[in-house]
Image 1 (cartoon, rainbow, N blue to C red):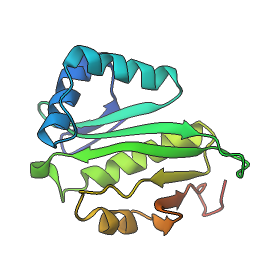
Image 2: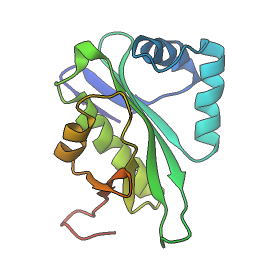
Image 3: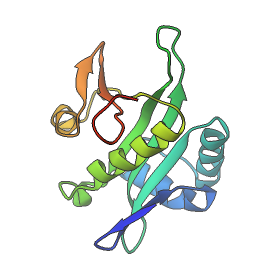
Length: 154
């Protein structure tokens, strides 16, 4: 999907399950056996979602998972960021921002007009990150409109 200074952002697949499971366990997001993680990644993709990972010279240093949600109050679906995780030693280097940018493209391709990010109970700094990446608090979530190039809403 993209590269920057040895960092690659790409779609995760079942072959990345071991690295994804290790990253999530390291961040306290649950311990999942790699075989089960492979099934979860496949299920997410089959349901129309996507998972992207950031890789630098080894195991994933970042992960973002997107689910497409339909709401009866909105004309277009939204992209719900179900997971956003960056390894502690990789933070403050733009990896989270690049993951959000990449998943925004995926959401636009799926017909979404906004991204939704849950506040996350234990994550210090998420509100600041959300604000810095264009999200605003709305209805208990952080919401970011997805705009076309030129600044017009899709």
